[in-house]
Image (tube, rainbow, N blue to C red; front, side, top):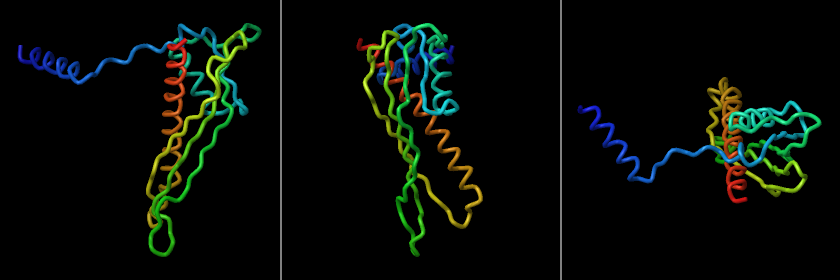
Amino acid sequence: MTRLLIVLCLALLAGGCGFKPRSSLAVASGLGPVAVSTADPYSPLGQDLATALERAGAAPAVEGQPAATLQLLAESMRTRPLTYASGASVREYQAIYRVEFQLTGADGQPRLSRQAVELTREYTYDAVGSIGTPAEERLLQEELRREMVAAILRRLDMALRAD
C-alpha cells in the first residue's frame, strides 16, 4: 500500500513540474523513405543518422524509388585552447563539433533549408597524466556525435510537425 502511495505521489510531482513523456517523432509519418547523403559514404555520423531514422520508424530508401534525402553538407570537429597554465601550457580545451545539413522531399522540394548545429564541450588536459588523454578525446567525440544525431532528429521532427 505504501509503495502504491509513493508511486502515486511521484507521478503527481512529475506531472506538476511540467514533465511529460516525449512523444514519438514525426519523421516516421511525415517523410516516407529517407536516404542519408554524405560526402564520405563511411561517415560515422551518416551511418548513425541512418540507423536513428530507422529506429524512429522512417523506412530506408530503396534504390530506384523516390525518397527524401537528408544531406550532410559539412561536418567539422575541432579543438581550441580554452585556458592556459603557467609556462604557457594548455589546461583546458574546447571541442567544437559543427554540422550543416538540409532535407529535401521525395519530390525534390526543400523540406528543411540549410541548417547548422554546433555543439561544444570543454575538457581539461593534464600534461602529467596524458596517457589517457587521446582515449578520452575519442570518447568525447563519440558522445558529441551521439548528441548531434539527437539534435538533428529533433530539428527534423520540429520542421515536419510545422508542415
